[in-house]
Length: 290
Length: 138
Image 1 (cartoon, rainbow over the protein chains, first blue to last red):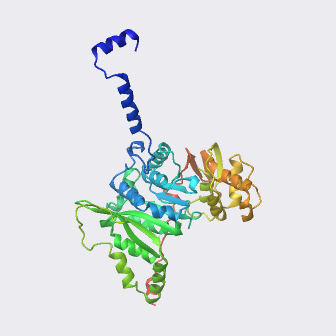
Image 2: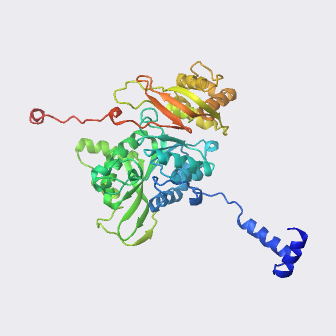
Image 3: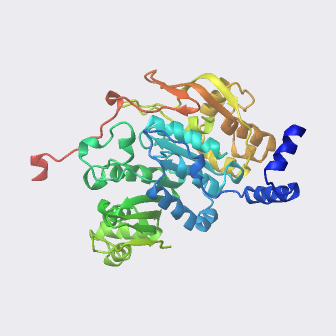
């Protein structure tokens, strides 16, 4: 301000003394001091009308990764992958949680929606993290060469029950349309995940109760995986789980025995199914199991 | 798109017997330095198709990667690791295309992202063989 105007301003406007303003400014500045964010920040996540914005299921998946953070770090994954990256919220968060090239960790992200791929690239950029993003159907093109190399896979699949003809429609519909029981795309993803996952591979997947997660677990068990619910969220209408799958030598042994005796051991079956209540409707409220 | 990704991609068109490696058409190449992690390099090395990496790097403008199929003893050489690291992780194909070696089909690379999405007629439908009536009742 030029001098005359400033004098006029100070005479007519009540302003606290300058040092107090500066003091407040500096404390405000300190309040805004950058604390490294463990997950992607919504304000930095890019968007597009045809791309699924981060929602409860995205947050649940990231919460699951945060809850399992210690295990993940100890596990020292080399290659991590997200199938269906959407806005990029989850893969960005995973990269922030586990670290990047300096830690020897590399990330891949795929999406069938070309807009999602662009949005993910932008979200990664605004957070200063890198992932190799590929526009493709699940992992088509990667399946041969990346087979057995993925140590951590995360998936928030299109799990909503819809008419079959809505599955695979271009655009944002592909983010949720899951066909009968919301299982069409999930059932397509699981064998691909099994192929890509390394011996020590972990898969984190979001499911709804309507997807019949206990059946999913049994199917995965037949491939030699054990399962655990990492996060569970319930509303009045539905219940959502984040399930972690990993290859278990005991489970593999059971599968071998089972193929000989043509029955899955009751004990192993019970331990997996015990995590899922028999009743279709669960209690209201959020709870995190670990 | 890094050369690591290129080394992991193959043509997914139906009927293609050997779709690897995809040939690179480089229109825009960017170098982005990134911290080296020797453990990662030693770990990934056995999975890398070496000739494909050498050829890809050359197309991207980097010719210092040793041609001879490197053996694991070279992983102790810092000079080799630096070169391997540079080729694998620091060269980015921003604009260009990946070409199927068998069909010539172009997979465009835009802003560093390869587009592997296929058209309807290029997708292999897996048909599960069902036993015929007579086989089932033999």
